[in-house]
Image 1: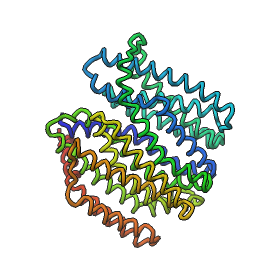
Image 2: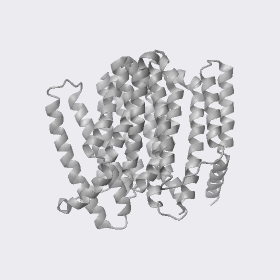
Image 3: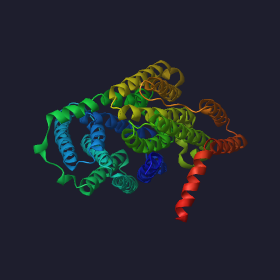
Image 4: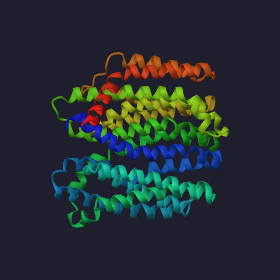
Length: 468
């Protein structure tokens, strides 16, 4: 199977798994906005945000290292077992140490839902690690199925706990923990990890090598967290939890793009690692970059054009102000697509330090813009700072990566993207039905013309498969 077909196959398999989780989260918005007050939803969002920060610190990003090293060890069963055994040893030790520190600390700090949050963190660590193990050993289908189970568990438990038992924020956190537990249990049994663990195979030299790869990713992850989350923290302190609830809702729509980026990124990480030393690498990477950026640019402007029609249907009126910040967050999420593509090329070459450096730069810019402008322009500062920090990171990585891989941007992509985004965002704020319909029509035509080659190629492939 050639490079593009393998990438497409893995992306499709992962897509069906991940999209179920993301779509369920998206379509649960009416439930959340109906049953939870803005302050309550803002609190849950803030808690989950800090969980995403804590998890990679606990693991020292070992899950990223185990994924990368398992790819290289696929042809050796003994090496695979050795890697998984070392992974489990460190994982168990890390969770025990963290649990002790957490229990002692929370005796002096009042944290709402402290025990539920502890369980949520533990199962998040396990599910995140097991998911990367599944990818590393090439079990993409099992990875996808586990994501589907996570989505089903989320929706069922949310309906029961929030609608039937009226548990509010507490029910939402329990649902997240339960979903991650189901994911972990499925992968542990399905991958037969219990047969691959032998603590006698613990190897200090191997662990040192793995951590040499993963530890530089910690500042990278923290920086990403700052870019994504400093907004919420600053909003909560400078403004209030209600404002954070509004911002969280406005972020839900661009998160669709981020989620799809993440889905592609999972399969792209594997392809980039497998083909980083291929002779036609630059041509292959450039082709993928341009194709993906055209698709996601079209998706971004398409989302902006659809929002005047979709937003009122999904979101309760008390969250109406969230509408204003969506275009800037969508723009930032499109910049993030390029960042992620470049990031996986760095990691394929095991240049994790460079990834961290560029992420720190973005985090600093994000915080500075937020602090300087949030009192003057409110939530707009958070949305705009995200877009600007992503743009700077994208530009820096594009220039820096040329030292290692030459990814060429196709002619017209940048100019066309600037024009269509400017046009679409301008009409977004006009609040006129005719202009909104016109905007949607122009965006649809743009999307077809920009992606005509890809769409026709996909159509021919599908037709040929059906005929066979």
